[in-house]
Image (cartoon, rainbow, N blue to C red; front, side, top):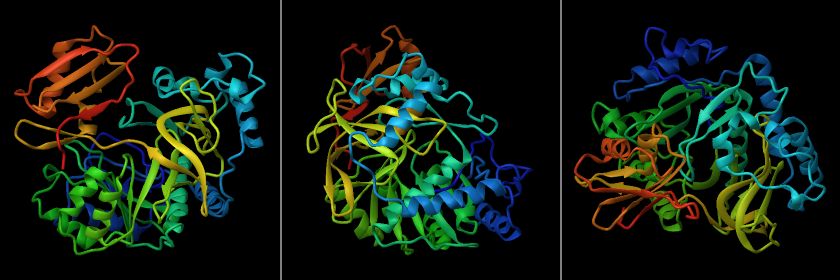
Length: 459
């Protein structure tokens, strides 16, 4: 929920994070002192990077207006398709190089070909509209939890819209964020061997603190410091994926956040109930992705995932891209969104559900999204699948799928089939160690790709 994080691969040094005017314009002295306290706290973790909202004064006025509009917007329009979606499609056909190369826009909605993550991975620049202002363009690299890492064009105002849609999700639970200056609005918790970590502020909530930290013990002086630090910060909200939230529950916190946001991976009913019992706070299961932002949130009654964005047209399609009637199960396809630097047009998510209605509005039922997969090292330690993505990101692979057999050995399927096997083994040895047997085979063109799977019990 931090607006506009911008990346820097250097830890805070001589130019301390709380004095970084380029990333934190208009930072008040009180908030500078807060950031200094967060970094120099006696139980603080290592913060390896810098980040900030980068919102100018004009930006802040604009995003506040958009914030109110998003909070009070009517629910998504499930018609096929609404008028605004056709206008969006025509703009894409006239300004986006990828769609311009396809030729004239078909006259029927079903005639518009779908796009996929593979299209973005092959040529992400082709999706940035002609005439878009690029002076403040940001580009984020996704972790590839459902597919493969891609770069996502963005802007500080786009990142700020995440906060607004999260607020909309929280309202479904009767929660209105109220953290302000001098308080911690949210802690974003990861649990990885390598993790992007920083401190920042949210200028849309009176510069309340935003902390992105890694719960892996390697980032702390002492494992007990994790509990001491979080209990002292007392964040209003905590966000993470099911892997990091499971680790959070093991810390024995005395602080109880007002709500917990689970993102990036599928959250089972049993795990959600366990998290709520351990943390004594409602756990919001958010269906979200970097390409589109927050898409839906599971309703408090658990019935379905309620759609959040009024200008995101959601279709359910079959394998050939044909729209299915309401109530039928198929792949989720998206059009629109709040990122004009990456306009989506019939974008296949790779996730599946059926579209229906609840008392809260249109919703996704039986959502099959991103299951968290953990892999076991020979020494018994568990690895988050994101760490495998990090290990392989330097290898020239178009696609890959990793499976851990019941005996602990690994099977890696790769495309292209002639990839450097020695380099791949060396890359996997970094997180797994050298003792684990690794078989590498070609990924057949027709393989249905589920990127990470395991036969081992991971709980």
